[in-house]
Amino acid sequence: MARPAHILLCGYYGHGNAGDEIVLAGILEGIASGAAGRRYEVRAISGSPKDTLDVHGLRSWRQFSPAGVMSALAWADCLVLGGGSLIQDATSRRSALYYLWLTRMAQALGRRVFVWAQGFGPLTDPGLRRMAARVLSRASGVTVRDARSLEDLQNLGVRGAVLSADPAFLARPAEHLGEGVMPAHGGEGLLGIAVRDWPGADAGLAAVGQACAQFAGSGSLVRLYIPFQHPSDVDVSSRLAAASGPPAAVLSQRLSPGEMVRLFGELDQAVGMRLHSLVLAARAGVPFAGVSYDPKVRAFCDRAAMPCVAVEDADPENLAVILREQRGRLDEIIAGLQSFASQQKQDALIPARMFWERLSQ
Image 1 (cartoon, rainbow, N blue to C red):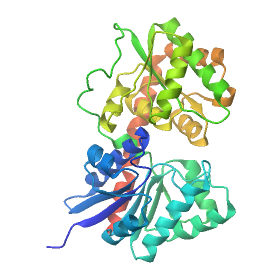
Image 2: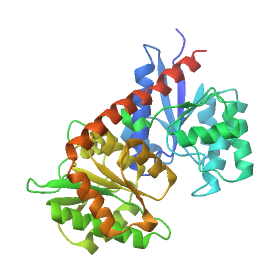
Image 3: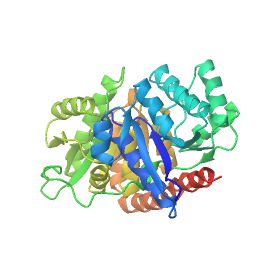
Image 4: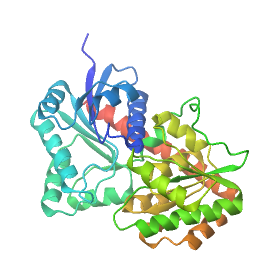
């Protein structure tokens, strides 16, 4: 009997970011959904192999160990660049350089490369753009999660890229939440808030905190700050919660991907800077407003037909008005989001079908 296909996943895994762990969980669901009885084994490249084993049950190699990465590629039949925005230089050139190097090494060793629902860019460095064009044009398959990424790849000359949707739409919710996750709210509604630090955004973040306090107070909602990146999001969330007063809670414990999915289903409304806070709200049919620090946030809000404000321009009064306006037409918004989420889930399955087709060729 032939051995199972060896699938190696690579992304920003094992770094304490809930969004990336939810993406990984969704990709694992996608791989399983398209396998159709084929035998396979999945392993990963991770910033923390122990965390990846504990959270996902995956064996992995350490991300920045050259020997470990080469061992991983020697084991693999196919390298999957899985979700997120890996090939970009908005945070630094290092991300793009690392993932392009990894992809080139896989191709040099004769391994297939599949790009699974990536958010490509922003990539502004001309040399990196030329490198990305060469490397991705040789991939066995390229799928992206948004139209802007697709257009950018087409402008680079990468042909055959396919539009899909974020893998987080496939992640399974946990059966229940652990003890102490939900704040005591006496039957009142919950406003979920997911913020992050961003250079030059202190005034905007303060405005978001004030707007959420104003709105929650007028609508009898309890504010629940939900950190996605530990510990940095916990720090900024605690600062905003303290500045705007009770009733507000900060979720300090790390949740599993399934618990995060389930938690968002318990909310009444949401405000998010973190992209995957908005994805989870949308899939749960929870009305939300985005706070954009990156084009990917506004792009997702536009696709979901939800409001979005730039963090640098955030104004407490305007954002509170947006949230109150949503509160006045919840049924209409929820119905629209449910329809959107259903289509996004179907689109999120596109990479799974395409992956198995390409792997078997």
